[in-house]
Structures are given as structure tokens and as C-alpha cells.
Image (tube, rainbow, N blue to C red):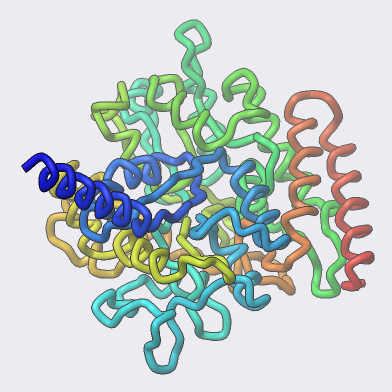
Length: 442
């Protein structure tokens, strides 16, 4: 008996060891945004369904961009799935750096399954994550940008937010709502350096002022009046009505300020709506209204278009497992899972058409404004004057990230009072023209 028991234990241990050895683990790099953090909380359900373990590398937005770009360009192989966006995906897909998820031809083992329903992805999101008709990343959530504002403070100021306000109204309302004695800032906006942080915001804003990054011959345009108007307006308004240290505030910093009741208005990603209206996290959850991003009457609003999406770097040894995770995390079933656990207001927005046809989701107070903002953003026609690039808050060329990171650093220095707006724009002009000449555009 003792021998049989010992043998049985030995066999059981051997099987357990073999199973553990066979269990696959994938590593995912992602951004430290709320929806991504929420997704990590449900990962055990994916592991239970598939037997695939998941290791997360969760990083601040600027750091994430640096890490995944370095890894994929050097073929480092640190990640099996990367969280990337509409800027990187078409460029990296064209370079052959990403595994195709869905082609316009027959399905194969590298593609998303038919049950996944690729056609349900919002056209704007699918188009922005594709190159020549091939989808290279699946949107976890999609977004534009819009105004989130305190209805009580707006009323107290004796003002009413238009559904489609101008920047002049925003500056007026910000001044009226600012109450330094109670630590309330009229407006909170991104000033943080980084092409996808403050750089993205000011570029989208500049479109509404008639600015553009390049003319049709790829000459930098920072020496023009529209860019001077944009930066001077931004800095003047933020100095008067923004939070102290706004030059270092990005998405997460402003989210925290708004949730603490320290912002009258916040213009940022539509995805933030679920966080500022969640009573578990936000002290002003029942006092938030929504409006379209501002304009100046020139025909372009200052809202962007973006998706945080999951992509598989070419060369991973765990392609099949990575594809399984992407199908799970960006599926209709995942949306239903979050809705059942946390309510429809907290599901990942902006990615699937069916979500906006769902009667339960239509009741969410910010659902329609999010969709309207997404549908009004046109990456192919983002500027008042013609421009040679695709993109709203970025120009979809490989050199843009490096150039815009440097430019945003100069802008942040101007916001902080370390140099004048004129100096920042002059440096931006030189930085951009020199880089474009070196790259052979001019």
C-alpha cells in the first residue's frame, strides 16, 4: 500500500509538473489607463478558459511608447502582445513588424475567427488600425475627445454650456468657474511633454485655429499666425484658469484632479467619461455634463481620433496564444462580461458598432456624445488648409513621433514659463525642418 501510494503521488506530481511545464505564458505591454487596469482584473477568467497565463507590464503612456517602439525595432522579443494605437499600427504593419489579424482574403490561422465579427468594428477604428486593407491591431477601446464639465459650477457661474461651444466660450467659462480659494480650476488640459500627451492635445487644438504641421511641400508651419494664436490662447487661458503645474499634467493627472472636484472643465479622451461619472472613484459623479470639443468657427473642431489596440509583434513564439487573448479581450463577450459585473457605463467604448445599437448602452449619458465625437473626426481631412498627411493629433509618418516629442518639450517649457511662446515656436520650426530635411522630405 505504501508503495502504491508513493507511486501514485509520484505519478500525480509528475503529471502536475508536466502540466505546469506545458502551460503557456504570454507577456503583454499595456498603458496604465483605467480600462486596461480593469481588463487585468478579469485575466484569471481568460486563464481559466484557455489555460494560458498572462504576465502584464503596465507602463505610463510615454514610457510604454518608448519601450514597445524600442522592442519592435530591435526585435527584442520582450512582448507577445503590445498595446499600440492608430499612429504606430499602419506604419509597423507596412514594415512587416506585426502579425496580420484579418485580411481581405480567406481566413487562416493568423487571422481573427469568423465568430469574432471583424465587420462589427467601427469603420473609423478599423481603418485607422489597418494598412492596405489588412487589420494589424484589434481595438480594445476607441475614443475621440470631448468636454466634460461640472454642471453645478457652470450653473453657479450663470452660464449654459452649448452642445458645440467655441474656444472663446471655454475661456470665458473657465475664468468664471475658477475659485482659487477653494482649489477649483476652471479648466484642466494636458501640458505634459510627449507627442501622445500634451503634444496630441495641442495639435488637435491647433487644427481648430487653422494651423497645420506641414504645408503641401512638407515645410514646417510653426512660424505662422495660426500656431501663434493656438499657443498664446492656450497659455493665457491655462495661466489664468488652469491648475498649478499644468505643464506636467497629462491624462491621468487631470483625471485625478477632475475626480477630486478640482476642475470646472476637462477636455480630453471620451473614454474618461466612465471614470468621472463612476461614484466609486469620482466625488462629482452626479454633476458631470458633456459637449463637443471646441472650435473657432473655421470648420474644424479640436477633437482627435484614437484607439488603444492590441497587436502581436512578428517573430513572437506564442502567436496562437496571443491571438486567443486578443479575441477574448476585444470581443462582444468581453463587453457583456464587464457590463454584467460593473454596469454598461464601464464597458470599453468606441470600438464596436453593435455597442451603440444596444438599448442598454443607449441609456448611458455619454454614449451618444462619444459616438458623435468619433464620427465627426476625420483623419483624412483634419486641417483648414490642405496638408500632405493623414492624422488629426499626429501626422502618420515614421519621423513624427521623434519630432513631435521634441516639439512638445519646447511647448511644455513655454507653459512653465521657462521660455516665451515665440521662442518655443521658433525652436519647433527649426527642429521640424531639420528633421524633415535629414529624412529626405525636403
